[in-house]
Length: 81
Image (cartoon, rainbow, N blue to C red; front, side):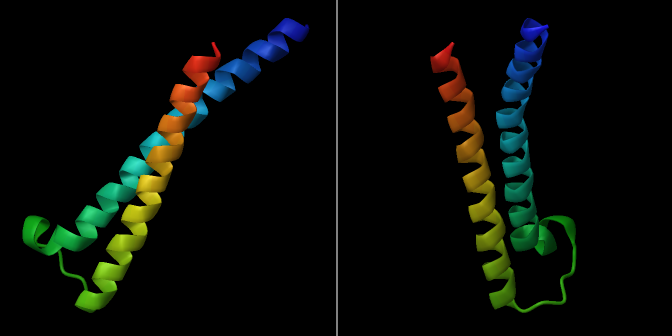
């Protein structure tokens, strides 16, 4: 029974960094959409240019943080095996 429990823990550990990586990419895409949505997609935002820049920085920074954590989790997990 202990081997089944350890197998499920290993599977859970493998998927978590990939989820972080995917979420980070989504946040970065949202940042690009906020910044360039009007030019690329003809989207209109009723916020000031300063608010767009701040929102882009926050979304992009958080996205980069998530990508970093995901990559760190993937590569540190491979080294431990």
